[in-house]
Length: 282
Image 1 (cartoon, one colour):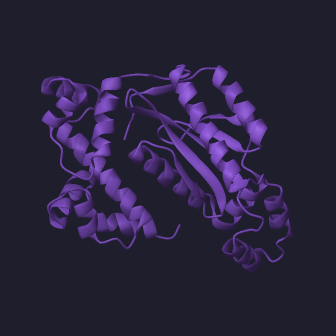
Image 2 (image 1 turned 180 degrees about the vertical axis):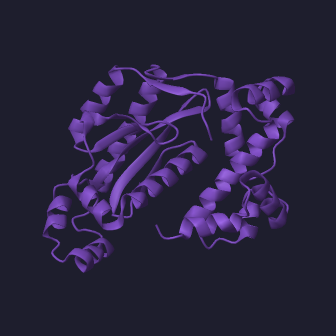
């Protein structure tokens, strides 16, 4: 969904990221709400191991997982820790100002064990033969036990809270519109009304309607429908075999046919064509 905000990061933040990155030898990145990179600690690129894994599986697999985890962190409005498909530790913390998501902070590319995930090693050897380069790249990654990882993640959370509390990262734009969008996106699982959003934001229905028309160039109903359709496409991308009935129920539609009609009206084709298009070989 198009954003009306621009995320502003003050210069002091780069020093904080650099110190954190150097101290723990891990990658730390700030992202925009849409996943664009804002800042990287020490301007450090992806680790050699991650670059090799991307060579093996393709960049899209990593980007899709990162996007999915950012979405989950935003949905929970809380930090999410997970292990990527290559077996490395990652954590994503959503950054919000007055209830509006303005970005994410992410740490990762460190290992929790001494051996490469068996499926990664098998896939590499099947495709490329010798795994000596992969093993060497994995061994060069920093490794932390579970207790140390918990403390690193705890410090990471404090770092994000500090940056927000000191207003070192800010939003430039229409906060009301972003609050409306954030509320709509948090409630794609059910039907919401203009009156409900007005109560939630402390504004009148006419103010909400005017703000959406002015800044989003659409009606409130079109805004909520677009949000649901985008969520449906995310679900269908991550689960190509998902039943349309399940998608419809997840989005709060009364039945799958109503959902299909809404999708067709907005996109010009049925949701089944979206699935086929996503699965078409490049």
